[in-house]
Length: 218
Length: 221
Image (cartoon, rainbow over all chains, first blue to last red):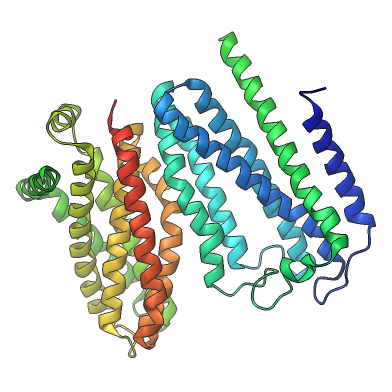
């Protein structure tokens, strides 16, 4: 029980926010209307992705000083899981865009830059596949991971702010701050973020442990 | 001052090697000129300002990947080991970056002049600002591609990996550069570009700092 309480908490929060996200009352704002509910599903995906990529950076840095194979496995599994969340973030965003902007992909800076940020991590996985020797692979991919991280920060947090975007929070569209004051949404949104981050961490730890067992069998 | 001295010696060595073989330098110049010429034969004239700008940067992107990919790939294992015993890794990466920046600036100027020769630039272009954009672009390409080429060389799988690894990293800079160059073509007031220049310099410094921190780990086998 002591070790599993956070898993129970995470599952509970995700189930609660999924049900409450569809059923509870939301404020009716221009443009957004009912699609505002996507906030509970789309935004937590990106938060979880950022947390997982940060975990992977932490272990990549740690690998460079420790040269311990376990750290490398943690870094790569965090990225594998983070990519799933990133793709889900793109998909939920695209579905939302279909109903609000009329097209799945409308060349909005936020969409484009998020897609490029995903490319960075796909390139990381290809780099790993290209190298056969394990220690060399771990070292070089850790270096690329650290090199790419500042670029991802620039892509996701700096560049979209410099261009006009239709994404909520940009260019006069109602963003999170304007409905932040609505306590009904806050009751669902914060638990959703925490819940999905916990689930993300859980998936990552399962993947990592499976990988460790596979390596032991070899 | 030992570092500065090492950097100076390494840059001198790079230039000497380049000058003796000449093959790489002339090869990349011919590559750029023939690419521009192929574009000329297929487009004949470019009335659209946006296309004129985008085509130039796409040519530069591919030319610079080809020009800088060799900066670490060309060196043999023996020579690598020899340099390793003589100088510090920071000196090597600084020297390579400076040398590549010089190479890129030269290459871009040749490319730009030939490009303007065949496709006349849009009438309102602020040539001086466009030059600043291309020079900043050369610096950005040089800082990023030097580090990526070191990574690709270590992975032992040249050209293909170089392109895959560098595209997502260079795209953010390329977007800022294209916007900056577009402002110059439209002949906007120069103060409009200060944001872009600042952002490019900040990203360059960031990339350089990360490269300096990481290269010593990459180099050691």
